[in-house]
Length: 497
Image (cartoon, rainbow, N blue to C red):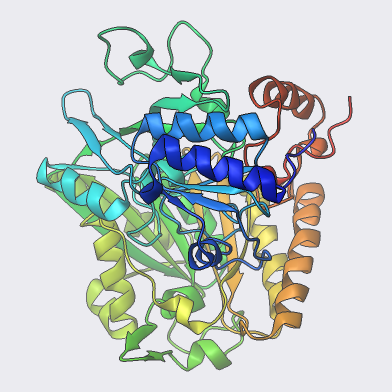
């Protein structure tokens, strides 16, 4: 597919005038400071300067922007919360950034139907607070409060409910590049609510999931919400081997005890103790000096947290069951009292995230530049992936090396995410790590049956997946014939007819 080209000066002036006339000058930014601000994120992807930054406040604004961009074949890059670490919101040079953060209405919290309808600019901090007032919650990922539920869920969730409830989206309102507006689920029918994703027609919401803004712009979404139960628990255990930890997680998951389990490497658990005091980051010394494959005396190799909720009687029973399963797999239970001695800030973060259903602002980014590598694979392979990936990461010579893994969809697959924090000023090391990540992705695909969790700019491409890639390319060409939507992602490259 041909990508849209940059603007010449005459077209830039024409597009700017049309945008300002359609939306108003206060919603269209083309000053140098605004363009520089939107040219990069915290990823290692090189910065690119857009021609315009547009701040729509409603769906009509979005329609107007897309029609103008489509007419002039100007590349569009979409963002909402702006919390991005993989380069998906870095614009195409001379293109348009559409920042949706002003579209921040919570339209409906339907406690009867178990869903909320929100705009893409609503962030987790506001959304979870509004739900708590109603006695409800949503799936909360390990992300700052400024991240948005719509953006997070569209790019595949890894939140606090993804073991039992993998997909948090029910219904979308979307706009195509030519201005076509449509709803994907039950709300497409007159007088119907948004409680049903699947109807008598194909599931178009699925096309927008993991499409990274390449098909159109989502302007509204219905999100699954859940009542806050009478009681909840965080059950913590420790294991001296990753293999034992995974066996424990699988047993707990298949017993239908956990809403979510997470296996945390000891360095990751301790890295959550990083905190900012004044202008200085306080970093536990052992995570900067200790081999991540050898925990300090008294610490397990892996912590496992089991998050569950229900009635108090059920919680007490399930705690005993978890202790029984942990013992079966050579683990031991860790009390909150013990955890407060080991890592009190870590425990507090877990309590906020999984007992109070609130996002946690991580201070661990103060260690260095966050560079993550992640894959999904079946349970039988994740043990091999952990050992191989740890050995590879140690070679980078930058500490700490942190990982976590979690079962998704009742343990049918495990997400494995491993990351390090090199010195952001060391460009050569950052490039070396990023280049090796790409090689490691290929190895994971070939050796361990891995599937990438999310697309990063240019990887993977649809050219890797045969007929599926051809089918998606046909949809892309039909919906976006001028190739204006998020060409920075590069995912449609390499498709052979």
